[in-house]
Figure 1 (cartoon, one colour):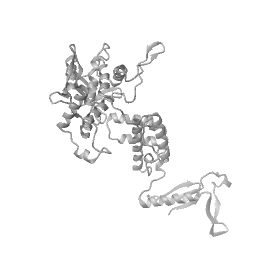
Figure 2 (spheres, helix red, strand yellow):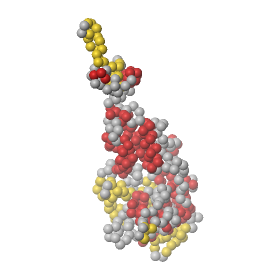
Figure 3 (cartoon, helix red, strand yellow):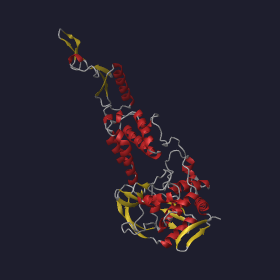
Figure 4 (tube, helix red, strand yellow):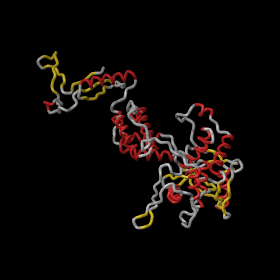
Length: 453
């Protein structure tokens, strides 16, 4: 039965009358050297294991109420041992990562988000001591310094870690899901929708790309590819007769090793190949014939599994023997090709002059002007042309299964048919290639693409 014990006094038999009990000051009493600020009242209850459990309080009523609540939790089967919450957050976060069933790339990304944005605030704290208000304050500070994407990733991971704490009986609630924790927001607070690029801007950026790399943004914007997927395209992925291209792999970096692996989500997909893109790819192949290229293959569980060879389309071209004929690396492409092209097209400013003349190649790039802008152009073009949402998601490689917020009709009855493929092909050809002079990469100059009549 729940009760409260006074730590300043103990009951002993009266020396003068053994049938009676009297109170005697304990060593914790201030008169015997104890502190007046010490917690005097001890809540006592019997846990589900039949053993006595305790917790000290300054105020007697709080101790009484706590003991009663613990006893009620035992009766309802909702009891959480107060000592369990003493486990530190850091080891729990690492346990959460070990239990996540995700690919190596996602695991590396999650580890980085936890290490940079969650661990500095919570790692040293006891799991049971973290309050919703502290999670809310953490979220507000994160929103002041980082964009919506980082906020969403960090909050999702924090909530997941606390869900594990609840499941393991370390605490009752998930403080990161409290209403006092703000949802992710844009840093400017406006929550403004991204404005997709139009075809003129896409072509302005494509046209100032160095000629060996000009087909990369053409394929990316015309087929809606992620950067690593575009870099990993191979000759065998294209079915020019059917007007389709299969996205089978991406190039990514795992530690210090560059590898091939499945596209994001761990699955391949087939997307429409517009006539304009097909023409550009054929012309590129005629000038820069693909040949066999081999990299290690990374499985979804993060383990290397032999090597994978394909007739890789895009490679570095130049005089440097260390990089010539090697695969395209995202960081190098971003600094050496993409950002200079943005500056040349007037999308971002030119690099500022250095203090000794020269030029720093440090470009100021807007957060909506990365290569991902080409995927947004692709998505907007397809939607404007009436391509079904199911088709857009499938072509972009976005899973519809288990996605919150999607109607049941889309998950169950949304289909991608040959008509969907044809509509998407025509949409890109009309928007991106209609009466557009397309560089054919040959010495004969250019040809006018009139893919859509």
